[in-house]
Image (cartoon, rainbow, N blue to C red; front, side, top):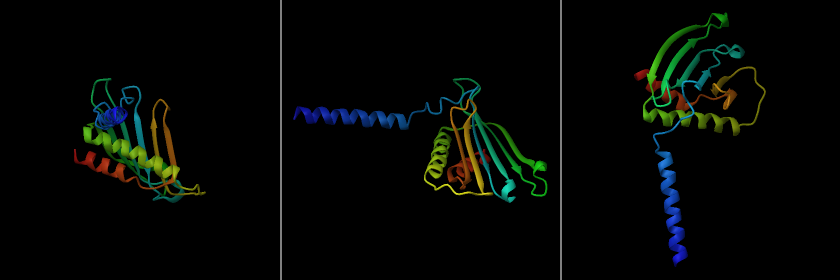
Length: 160
């Protein structure tokens, strides 16, 4: 009986620790003033030349400051891709705590899509890339899919 109580107590402590980790406010700590997280999504409007871009850069001013983001959209010019134009640019958006979860879900969504799809040769398609500026994490996926959580995150940023 004592073994069962000890096992039950240990499982309770472990589950509480996991719950605290999931609801911990100290997430995305590796993102700081010197190590930015960038999320870039490009559609296939212009075929093999790419298309419109959505670019989100997440950073902090210092180790104790809240997460900030710069967001830009670039409209692709299919006649001359080098003449694509920035159509939206928002700087220094404060990332709310609930947005942290969407950032993590976006990363996980890209990883799951990439790892669970058979490789196919392609000359066009959606391109997604997530990376830390110190190169400790680089995830590139082409051809990819539209990231639903990234769209939700961008929609929330547009409302701010």
